[in-house]
Length: 189
Image (cartoon, rainbow, N blue to C red; front, side, top):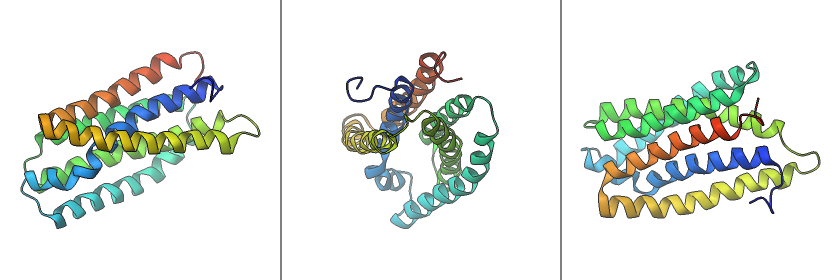
């Protein structure tokens, strides 16, 4: 990606974000199948998605303000990735709709924690006159990881089951947090 995107800070942020988006995309197309496996219906899958979106929407407003007022938002970014990974691991314990809804809140919390911090860091490191191009790289990464994640998620569940999927998703988030920590020591302060 160096020949396409010369900004080293944005390359680090995009690489870490790609792992997290890949992990999230793995569940998207098959989420309703998981809900059915734990005894839920199509309506329950919709309720779980609603719970996630509302919790993330409310919490993101608070963390957006927090991200504006901290000296090193990369730690908020890393914490969000870790909480998201923990939420993905918690999917392995879901046995009822109540536990699913609680896990959805944890996942929404993790997403709401990291998103404003990522946006702040990415925006602060855009090169003058290249914001459209550099945000375009983020958008392209999002779509490519969504495509790959949709395929990989179905593949993993088909051959190995949901537990392997959730552990893989969590590990990608944890790897992303670790990568951001070590790769950005001199770049992201």
